[in-house]
Image (cartoon, rainbow, N blue to C red; front, side, top):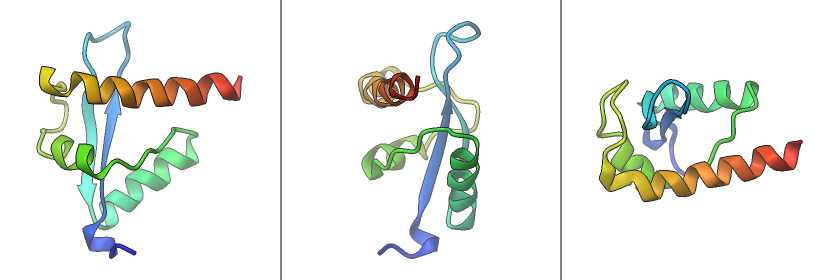
Length: 89
């Protein structure tokens, strides 16, 4: 099991009515990562573990748009989230 200090999390926002591309809205490691994950779960926001994607996304700044090179990976993530949301309904 990974130690807390090794844990990383990145939160994305994608509101198609307000912005054309997903953005990083929170990121952190250790306890901050745990807080991000806990808040997401408390609010019913899906959480997916993808260490490789997290490593790349964690290099972006807060409020930075996802670069075109990550569109496919993030689209797969969004498809996962949308499928979970449709199952809840």
